[in-house]
Amino acid sequence: MSKNATAVLETLTLEEPTKDVGQDMWALAKKTSLDLNSAYKYIMFAEYFSETCVVAREEDKVVGFITGFVQPSHPEVVFVWQVGVDSSQRGKGVASKMLNELIARDACKDVRYVEATITNDNKASQSLFKRMAKEHDTSFEVRECFPEDVFPEEGQKAEYTYRIGPFSK
Image (cartoon, rainbow, N blue to C red; front, side, top):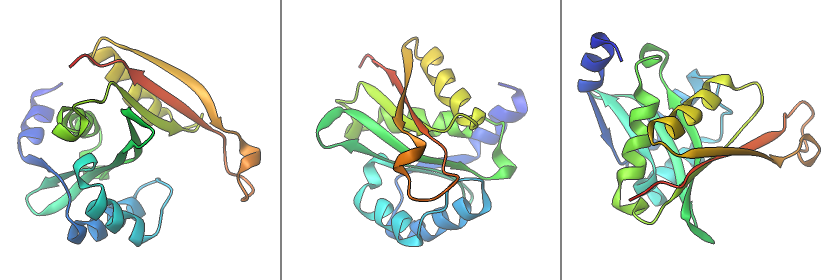
């Protein structure tokens, strides 16, 4: 990481969101290439899943977020639904820092795997999760999760599960 990227990361704070921050997460998602969910989804995640969501702030501005949850039937897995980073912060390691914050939390003390679904054309997310596996000296595997034909909308691409781990605690 460059000196400039390190300096930028030092100006960020990483925290659990509150329901009031859900609207900022939605606004950021709206500015990115993420699939935009309803504002309610971001508010609900910030309220009910705050322990497994991360918000990155620069001063008072939300410049990154992760929405995720520990799978009820698999408490050893945290599923990362979305990772959003403001264009002003891209290439500075913000997404990696948020992922590391997430798995270090008490809510993830029993988590040994991180999973996310990613389309074949989302090279940035693929790189993020592969890099996470390398940084933690663990493996990753990829398998098809949701083929195109399960989606009711035309043009939706197949989603592949990226599974990273096991993480040693």
